[in-house]
Image (cartoon, rainbow, N blue to C red; front, side, top):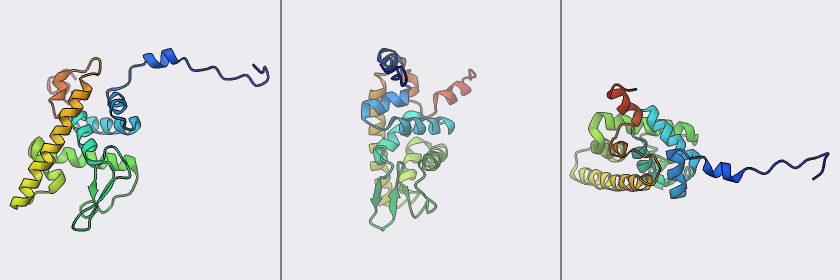
Length: 183
């Protein structure tokens, strides 16, 4: 050890290993996603009074938490980012990840509040058209996101202290507590 330039102490790996990750970080670690992004999506969901597990499922399905995700549609519009916001309906989009998460979560939450979980998910993806092909497309999309939701629930079941009653709710644990008068 050099007394003039002492080496910094090594981190206490045992202490670091004993720190319990947040549910969002636990999910990110299990799925190989960016823990900062999953935590931001989780926090945005809670801020909107929505289920963080539903938000994780939607973003996992839409982009696998890839901020640069892009999809060029047959009508030549482009779906961008974590929430795959469409350039035709969300033309203001820029690559600011925090703004994207906040807006994407608000857009999802507004649709679920107006149309219920399955209706809101379908409209989030396809819109409100009642054409038979769009109705079918919505149903397929909802099935895929709900399948992803089941995967999030299975993943979160391994998190110590995870409360299964929150897994089935579209509302966040904070909103459930408020409705039950304990928050």
